[in-house]
Image 1 (cartoon, rainbow, N blue to C red):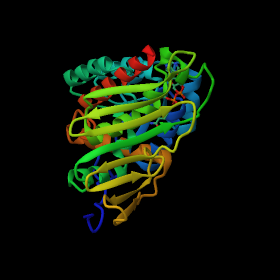
Image 2 (tube, rainbow, N blue to C red; image 1 turned 30 degrees about the horizontal axis):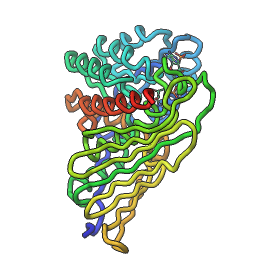
Image 3 (cartoon, helix red, strand yellow; image 1 turned 90 degrees about the vertical axis):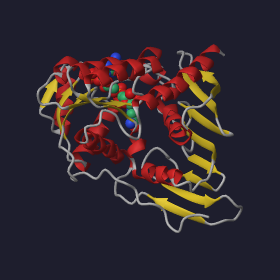
Length: 344
Ligand SMILES: NC(=O)c1ccc[n+]([C@@H]2O[C@H](COP(=O)([O-])OP(=O)(O)OC[C@H]3O[C@@H](n4cnc5c(N)ncnc54)[C@H](OP(=O)(O)O)[C@@H]3O)[C@@H](O)[C@H]2O)c1
């Protein structure tokens, strides 16, 4: 039986008592611009500093986004007295080093996905964060969207019954340029670390860590994974099938199928979207849900920033909905998949 109505999302609404933290951005590239716009428009947070490897690029970004301090090194930014929290938006290869520098300076850190390149790096980061007592969180913004809150409540309330299947895909045709960071092994390129992490973290949120990982796919000429299907085996007859690609755009939908109901998330499942909950029996009842807020696409990056400020106020050092141990486990799955793909 489906419930008569779906739960309300538990939102981290801006201006509801969370501190207005001062943010510094490292890596003023594409996503940093989207993040700065979302934060400025949809949160009570303030971006006070930006650091680039070039002062010109830092100044240009600062001018575009109304940021006071334009700096030309990570060191200057993490030690700046006007910065409480560092947002790391560099390529994946730099996440650990910048994260450790911020932690050493006693700052909270939001690190773009993937939090690091490997599970071993994530362990190093987690140890440093725990020793310093600062909050370190992956910028896996999908976890902080309204739909994620509703989906977690439905799972916790047992509405889906025993969950047996997760299906999710993330394929994009961003570029075929072999010089782009996505194609470069030394920058942590490849589909799995950049796009596949969305389906993998989704399966992890629903089913926890797998007992076995099987990956089938192909590599680019530059030596990173180009496309793959991962089959994750879980306890209790559950399985996740996850696809990612940097070669072609796929529907980017996600499904959670349980013994009582099936939840189908409309593409793109990792941004603010809608879903349908259908009773398991053929032709049974269904309920639809769509994001009730005005925030669309990358506006949704604002939720994670407000969530972080609230977690800081609560004295937390980890995200309660995406712990550092879960980050390590997700990267262990990706490590294993990447190793299998590289060995074929
Ligand atoms: N949440 C999301 O939806 C989302 C979407 C896209 C990307 N991301 C993540 O965000 C991060 C950045 O991605 P992006 O697409 O914004 O990349 P991007 O446009 O290439 O920007 C990255 C910036 O990092 C700086 N940087 C520092 N060290 C670098 C190095 N060794 N090589 C190249 N650049 C370096 C560069 O700025 P300077 O040269 O000025 O220092 C560059 O502009 C990645 O971790 C990615 O996975 C997240």
